[in-house]
Length: 113
Image 1 (cartoon, helix red, strand yellow):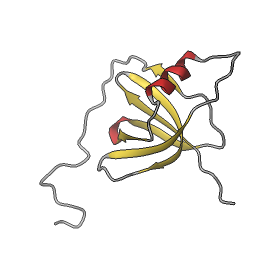
Image 2 (cartoon, one colour):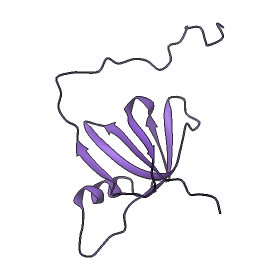
Image 3 (cartoon, helix red, strand yellow):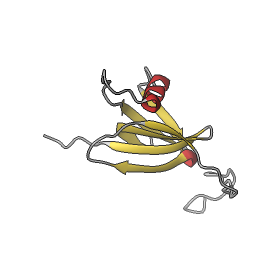
C-alpha cells in the first residue's frame, strides 16, 4: 500500500496568513503558481467549534483545486498528520520585502538563448 502524502501549506493572502492541509501539492500547469489539491479540514465536533477553521472551511467550500502565487508561499511541509486549518492576522512590521519578478521578458534563459 503506497504511503499517503500530507502537506501543510502556509501562505499570505490579503494581509492574513493562511495554513491549509492538502493531499497533493505541485507546480501545476500555470507558470508562477503552486497547485494545491484535495484540501483537508478537521471533522466538525458538536462540542468544540473553532471559528478560525470554520471561516477557512467556508471560504474554500466546493474548491477542488486552488492555485497560489509563488511569491505568497511562506512554506510547504510534508507532515505525518493534519492539524487545524486556520487564518491569522499577519504580524505588523516596519520592514517591507523588496518585490522581485519571477520571470523578466527579454532576459536570456538558462542556456543563454
